[in-house]
Each structure stands twice: as structure tokens, then as C-alpha cells.
Picture (cartoon, rainbow, N blue to C red):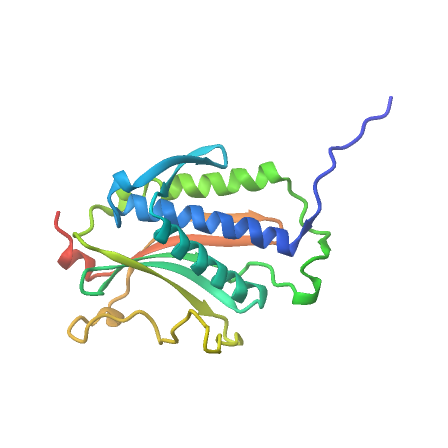
Length: 225
């Protein structure tokens, strides 16, 4: 009697990137909820990756996050991105925390081949969901790790390019070129290394990325315990 092996689905890079974009959107809503950037009552309970998640009820917040991630994916398709970060800022725009999605090891595929099946991506949708679920679980516990933030914090999303990455250009570009998120002149954040807290390493064959949080030393001075 012969047996047949379970057939794993084929993946194109475009499909992998689409699934990753969905994951980033869920991650950002989770961060906004956990860090109380908006009041908890403005979030609704949803479900993703067979796990309860929070999603902002505010249409403008949802649209902003979706559009920002869409712009990130435009750069990811070009293979230019090394990091995507969610930066938490104080009410006077001092960086306090940075949630980093390190894409240095993420696969890079030429734009002409992104609709072609990738032979070496031998994992199932269930395995991908399990990996993303674990990441969201880690993010869902960051409030207990990072402590309470001061009132009226805001956030922004940044990308860092590879050394050979081409910066986005054009009138409609959503990105503002910068050397980095820098504090006010009287707060020398760049001279003080941030505290780094690893959250998760995802490794599914060639699909690999890291998530960690950086806490600035300035945060200790402004956070009310």
C-alpha cells in the first residue's frame, strides 16, 4: 500500500510579501493598543492567526497604517529595506521606544520574478500562521515588560534602507528623508546606546527576520512610574 506525502503549497514572493504586509498591520495595531497610544476603548477585539488581536476602530488610524505599510511594501519589492520601525514619541517628539522589524535577512527577489513560484519556500500556511501568531503573542505582552508611557505619546513608521538601497523619490513619495529620528538638541539621545529587548526571531527556510524593541535612555527621565 502506497502512501502520499502532504503537498505543501507553492509560494510566490508576491504572496509572501502580501502575507507579511498583513502581519505588519496586525503588529502595529497591537503595538498601538499595548502602548496605549490611543485609549483601549477605541479598539475592537478581532481574531487573526487563530489568536485574539486588537484593531483600532478609528477609520483614519486604520487608513494611515494601511497606507504606510503599502508604502513600505513598495520599497520591499525593490529589495531596498533593511529595517521597518514603529517609533513611539513623547508629546514633544522625543523618541522613547522603537519596535524594529529587522529585514536584513529577508529574501530579495527581482521584480520580474516576484510572481514566479519560489521552489525553496517549503512551509504551509499553517506554519506561517503559527510563526506570526507567536510574534503577535510576544507583542501582546510588551506592556508588562516596557512599563507605562507618559500621556499624549504619538508614533510614526520609519524605514531604513540597505547600503545600496535607492531612496524613494518623486512628488508623491510618503517618505521624508532623514538621518534618523533625533531628539531635541538638549537631549543627546544618539550618544547613549538604547536598551535592546529581543522579542522574536522568525526563520522559515529563507524567510527570516527579527523583532526587537529599543528603549532610549531618555525614556527613564520622562516616564511617570
